[in-house]
Image (tube, rainbow, N blue to C red; front, top):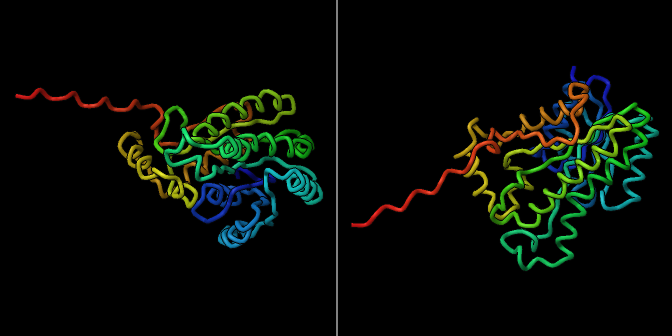
Length: 266
């Protein structure tokens, strides 16, 4: 199996419609042993969701912005496994005043929260996992991205944070390569997860994808994204790092249709 014997840390499962849940399910089906994290009120939702996985994984509390939480989780994994082969970063958050067309009025504090939680946290996770991945002889860190080549309506400072996430991943790939640790992102098309539905303008994103993606895009099915995550967590991408792999039906490769020329009036 693709992930036979691998030990993986999966963040970001809140409900069973999430990308992280689907990735965890595929990882278990492919032979991996996993530990799942969340924090605060979402922790109970995670504990309920993981009961639908093929086997029930441990659920640990970790707020990625809390250094003590991160250290405690890594200490647990060290005593539990003694190493770590891979980690999925499925963490993103922006305050409501950083979304919804409020770009010009977003306060500095809210933009900073979006950056720290959604982009800087990839560094936090990778550096926290570094000693355990060194014990494994290397590893793979995979993050979840979204197209940031366009200023999407209402996505606002989360779009800026995703651009930062790409840059963070490249610098991590540079600095962690000496330890045989790969860092890659998967850029998914819009999926109707609970988190996505809370983003103002999601229906516009969905409609745009449906019209332009050359391969049929099903916004209710994260399986294709989960499979790519698991490929990157496996040994089947040994020399791939610093990449953004698109799983979006080909949307990113197709230019937007030109606006129709105005018709002359009689």
